[in-house]
Amino acid sequence: MVGMGWFMCMLMMVCVVSCGEAAPGAKFEELYRSSWAMDHCVNDGEVTKLKLDNSSGAGFESRSKYLFGKVSIQIKLVEGDSAGTVTAFYMSSEGSNHNEFDFEFLGNTTGEPYIVQTNVYVNGVGNREQRLNLWFDPTTEFHTYSILWSKRSVVFIVDETPIRVHKNLEDKGIPFAKDQAMGVYSSIWNADDWATQGGLVKTDWSHAPFIASYKDFKIDACEIPTGSDLSKCSGEEQRFWWDEPTVSELSLHQNHQLIWVRANHMIYDYCFDAARFPVTPLECQHHRHL
Image (tube, rainbow, N blue to C red; front, side, top):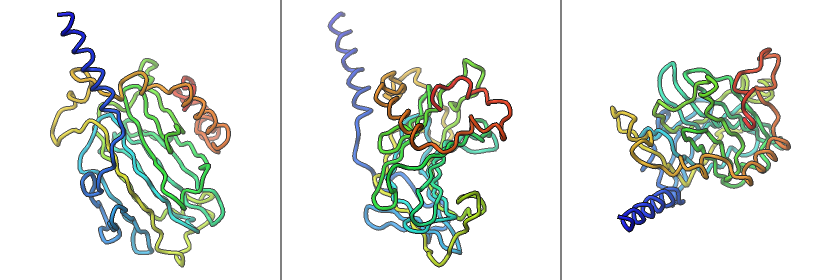
């Protein structure tokens, strides 16, 4: 019995470790499909491109929905004068009380830094924006953008550097996104009424088409078949690598990375916007890093 117990323990350890190992990215069509303006979504070998012109933007969506896990895509953003455009990569459930985790890349005039805005919706309520300037030019090479979602937190990651952590604070009476399966999406569209300098800089259509490029598609998450219940992803009967404390909590190095990002690149945090929120949002009073 002791031998069998040791064997089962080792087997569980191997499962937890191996499930979290990096795997080669899938082909676009294996995980995703065009969701609108199909003529503006082009597959070019290993690279998929979304195109925005003055007739339409474009988008794609995952073929399945998921509850917890990690999704990653390598993106090369719109080059040159991208003012007025928004490229988004996000997870979302459906309905008016939906949950959503957003990366939104706000275009800018040539020479100005790209701004990435993150937001979290829980039960249909968002207004949790943070903005930061990226510390590299995201238009010259591909960079990896990831969302790691567990029962403990949602972590936004850029090239394996955490830029935001939204923790589960249900013990403080604050709702957390954990009971709705979510799809994975990306899109590009014209948002020149707000995207660049609050809408002061408009889209210059003479630079169209605006193209965002994607490759190395990865989804390592618990898939929810259509019409299925969520219990198989709850972790009650099966251990998932993203629920391990060493994964769902930031390491000391990752905490230092997050502090560096916030100190050197953050330009807006809703938690400190007294004009919008005269009373500090409750989660802001408890989060150490948001």
